[in-house]
Image (tube, rainbow, N blue to C red; front, top):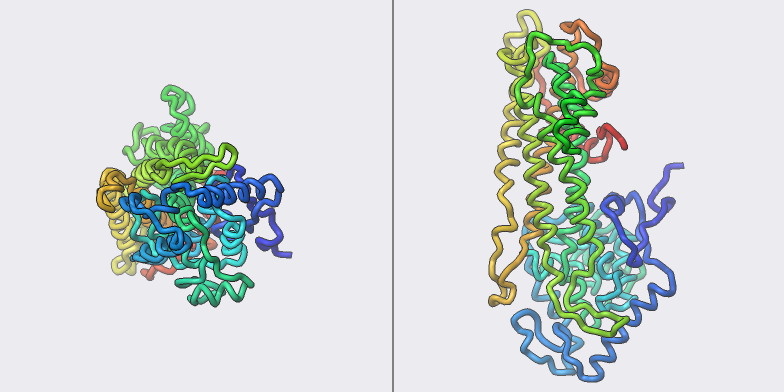
Length: 516
């Protein structure tokens, strides 16, 4: 039997700590979502909402509940209009633009928002959590525009599309088609919500779009680091390079864990405990010799970036917070997405550097001045027909274009804070823009990596008859997989279909080496 999400352990939302892996699993429908059913968890949610209700009955003043929003916090809301205020919040924030978030991105956003609200300090009702959970359970996905958030007060505009859908407004993607939210909710047996005081603010005033996107970006960057290492091993062997650049003693003398990890993987791939294959060339060019130092920076950044992302994922990040145990209303600024902004600005920088590394490796492989005996442009054409065949010439140009665009995207978004909303939001994080930038850099870098898979298939096959030593077993197995997927380029052909197939496989985790 093929396992579906219903047959797998659900990701439980009850305030327990969640990780990147769980958000990614939810985003791909590999695991289902479920609210925790422990009585203590539900009782905490109910107490928070009840305390807020009592505070309102006793004429308490609560920002965003009995006052206007942002710089309008000095405006008192007449009691008879308090119930209408949440619906005005998501209504006037319906001004997003740009592309729609993908289904995977949208699920990650829903998971991040549900995780925050399940911390139990947002003053929302149990019914709201159930409605949000049911969007994930039934894969009823709000159509969320990607653009319009400055990252504080959180992701107000994009999250307004989540709030509106819970209330039966705007549009969703459901059962493969775009449709009105009210119709889709009816199909899963749900009634539109009428939001209680503070609930629109609780849904919208947080970092869940940037955090959901950051979880996906982290996972994709991990795949880039692993494949870039394997491809470097292929390129060292294909260019008749010196595997002893990755010597264990050498790397023990510079104790960064990331480069040491990459060097170890390269040693294992190249079986470099054997005699040097090219003793006449003591040092390869930097893009091969220094590959552990480049990819290793990404590897060293990953645990730290994961910590930042997961701390944000497991935070209560709306405002104000409603603390049910001490019965306090806590006004603050947890919606500020500075940690995600830093994480994503960092991630896009180190990932783009890996794209640049691979671009430089390819430039060597296709050039007869530097590839040590391989044919020009890695063309496998021979005889008279070699004159009209061009191998991977255009592939190298495309790789250069993608790399240049990735490098261009590395300008940090977090330094472009803008004063907004009548100078109430006068310092903002730009975390969501940073996250979108990081995903774009990853998209471009993945295209570089996919192209390098085509180049590795070609270069290894062309080096085999020239080499005095057999292809090391790890790379031989890799070449076999590549050969089953990509035909050797002898006669010129369009390679875009190969590229897209490899990209799809990469993004599904099918090409990730070095498990564990």
